[in-house]
Every structure is written in C-alpha cells, then in structure tokens.
Amino acid sequence: MGKYFNFNKYTMDNGLNVAYRKTDSNITLIDLNIGSGSLTENNNEKGLCHLLEHCIYNGATAKYTPKQLDDIKSNFGYSNASTSIIPIYFRSDLLKEDVESCLDFLSQIALNSKFDETTLDQEKQRVLREICDHKTNKSIYGESFNDAFFGNSRVIYDVLGDAEIIKKASVNDLMNIYKRNFNINNMGLFLYGGLPDNIDSLISNYFGNYSKGKKLEFNVKKLKPQIKSSFLYFKDIFLLNENNPDLSSAQFSMRLNAPNFNEKYYYEMQILNDFLGNSYNSRLHSEISAKKGLAYNIDSKFIIEPSCNYLSIAGMIQAQKYKKVINSVFDIFSDLRNKLIPEDFLIKNIKKTNYDILKNYESPIGNIDIMKSNIYDDFDIVDVIDIIKNINQESIREAARLYLPENTDDKKYSMMVISPFDEEK
Image (cartoon, rainbow, N blue to C red):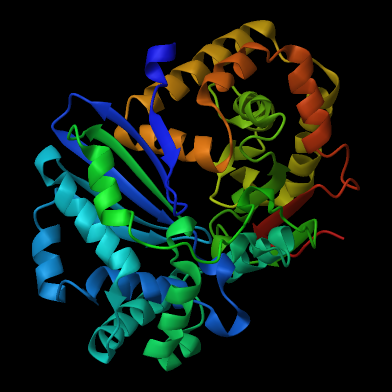
C-alpha cells in the first residue's frame, strides 16, 4: 500500500504549509488554501470574505493589472476560487510547463492584492446577484428545517452573507480582512501531478519572502448541530391529489447527527447508512415502501459538509399515514440498535469502502484532499485502511446506539412532514 500514499510535506520558516506529490503526468493541479472564510467574520462583516475572494481573483496586484492576470489565467486549463466557512481556496489545473506561472499568480493574488473602487463595484453586483438567486431558490420549509436541526450553530453560516452589508462594503473593509486573515502562516499550498525538478526552489522564490502574521486557529470539524425542534409539520395544499385525495403524498424528511471525519464511528455510520437506506433492498425501502406500501420512495444519505456531517432520511409518503411511517422508522432504528447487521452485508460494504477510498486517491483532487487532511487533521490515510479492517458487526451496533434515537422522546433528530392535510392531533 505504501506506494499509494507517499508525498512530500514540510512547513517553511514563515509558516506556509506545503505538500505535493510528483507524478509523470504533464498535467498539474494546484490548490492554495487560505485560513479565512465566513467563520472568521464579525457580525458586521457577513459576506465580506466571499466578496473579498471575488475582488482578489478578479482584481489587480502590485505586479499585475487585472488584464494581465486574466491573460495568465487564460493559459491554465482551469482556474477558480471558492469561499466556505473555512477556507477560501484558489484552484488551478494546468500544464506542467505553467507551474511556475501559476505559483507567481497565486502568490500575487494571495499576498499582494490591490483593491480599487472599480473592481469592488463590479464584484458587488455579481455577489448581490448570487444572493438574490440564492434567496429565490430557498424554501420556507427548508429554512425552518435548517433552523430546527442546526439551531444557532455556525454550521449553516451563510457564506453569501447579508446583502445590505455587501452594498455598503468599502475598500477599507476588505483591506481589514485581507490584512487580518491573509498571512503566509495561515496558508497551505498543495500540488499534485507533473512538477519541475526545482519545485521546492520555485515555491521558496514565490512564497518564501513573506513574514509571519497572526495565526488563526479554527477547529471546524468540531462544529455540531444544535437541535432546537424535533418535529415540524406544514400544510401545503399543492400536494393534494384532487382526483383522489386518499392517494395524496406528503414529503417526509429527517436529520440525525453523524460523526465528522476523524471521529470515532465515522466509517461505521457510513456502512450503517447504506444498510438503513442507501443500498438495494435497504431497510427503509423494504419495510416502509415494498412491504407496507407507505412510501413511493424513501432512502437515507450520509451528508458530508465542510463543517459537519449528518444523516438525512427523505421520501414521498402516504400523506394520511405519516404517523405509521414515523413509527416504522423508529422500529427500524430499534432493530439497528439491538441487532447485528448481516455479516455478508458488512463484508461487501467494507470492500466497497476500500474501493471508494482507493478510487478517490487515483484522482488529482483526491490526492489534494488526502494531503490536506494529513496536514489539517493530523490524519494519515494509511490508517484508514486499518480502521476499516477493524470494523465489525458489534462496532456498527455501538454506532447505532450512539447516533440513532432510541424513541421519539430521544431528541437526537429533527423531523419534518409537509402534507396537504391538517396535522393529526
């Protein structure tokens, strides 16, 4: 296995984290991660990190005009930027011959950006359009469900931010965040693919002359939902089957807390989810849909977010029998908490999990992600294989007892039903 997991990593004297894996490819993927994002914003800065990312990527630097930067980017096969709660990252996919040009470009926008009113006004309009489109696509039900499950946790902090704050944003506002967050020791540089023999020297040339700034520390992986409500019910007459009301459907949704990466039972819960509702002949499908005919479809997914993970159950169910669906779901939970899953299913899914990990590692982005998790989570991907080998029926039952609610009074979940009928009392 060793040949799959070798890469170079080091920390420069100024604090920049560097990791790369060199291959014989003529293509190179480069990521520059910045320890900035919406989680670093104050209440009067909501959305400014995202606006800052836009201005940096499309603005000027001490060395280049916006047009010159556009000319540089046009030589890359792909180039983009993105903001999450943590981090902001700049990603480029390019020919090996353009690696030095990309390092120059990244060092300039991350460490030598210049801000002007023209670029700011231009990017404000783009961001405000994003906010408008996002709000148009939002559902009042979805917003309420998010609030019920995530509560006041910053897990669902809106990266796009507040439109009024964006409108009033000034160059000085962006400069304050830039100076506060864009320090060399808050950055990580990750490269995979074809690399020149002097790659370390090139990295030093373009990133080595900057001094340390304030180091920001955020353990994003420890963010958890703060469940406020376990049950929501909404009436929506548009779901009514006017020709045959008794056959009307309702939308059923449920969310459960789940372990984050590098937490105990992370892989057990993924296998448990497959058995519950994410595989052919899953328990949810076989019991609630096929056997009892209570749902047209119902399944579960292990949702992996940048800030937290959770289990999501969703389906279209018989509207007038939603309580039977709820009881059936909890009956399945009880079985999983008390009985062992079949050994043949476990063996197949351990094999599938190993396949997924190794397949991911064959991709350039997978390699970059593995290097990031090694540096930021202090987690060696080699250990994952050993962890998976040690998964057994009992450890999966332990995971079920920890994360699946024992009954409806065990407030480890949020549930939502949207139906054309009034709620049963």
